[in-house]
Length: 377
Image (tube, rainbow, N blue to C red):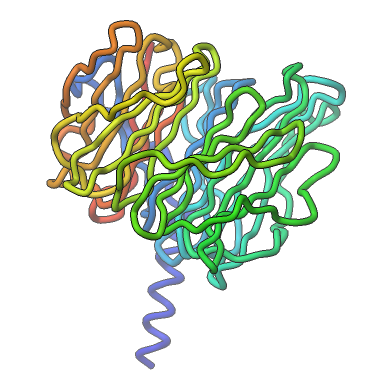
């Protein structure tokens, strides 16, 4: 009887998650630029996953629900409202990964792509997409197995080819043997049939970004060292591991900015202080780390495109020792930091890193509540 009651409560929680309206009232005047703040119904257990559509400025939010189900909600940019949650079926034991991609050549295909680590640690993929025939009526695919298993959250990134026409996805995971593994997807060809690996081992999920038709990867080694490698899309070959001096007890954060041919790497030091190092095409990696001061409990978050007009600086976000999110901006031309300030979430504490993308930020409250912050120009 006790087991039946527990099961009934779990089912009711899932139903409440789906049936509650997403029409949360927006709260303005939160003292941070033009941001508005609201909460979404339901709850989540892990970091949220957020992706931006460059075609219609919509956003897709994917979360791991209260009983491990995977849910998605879409921000309608025309009405500035969230559509109701969709239960995607299946379950996950970690944060999902999501990316948006499109193909600017006939048949003008576009879609959101989701990869999750299943309850069996295997990897599964699902998409929400449309082509030129039904561009206004996208549909969900079924879940498919990608083969392989992972011990941590998958990492998914999107890019276009050099002509800016054909979309590509790159998926990177930490295997059950601690090696980093990679496979890619293109529209028309689908997923590559096998996984490739650059070798080596990592103690955490890799950090990846795309720059100039290369997949850049930074990992935390098994003894906390920091290592860099990249995959050339044209040759399909990995360059080989290069040691970046320094150590970290958490996964690194990496961002690439194509217009300036630069990357920025941010890590949590062994003393919990965040440190930064940059890479440029002309000079390679900077010779020393910038100490940003302060302290963080886990991996930082790099937020290049939040908001998208901010091309002269990039912000980083960390979770302080009190669980509150802090922000620091780096201005490239002046090579200066603004210093730490609390993010627009104010005193809201979280136990996982946030997700940020194109004027949106989504945070998990300590009680599992879902908070979003929207930049209104």
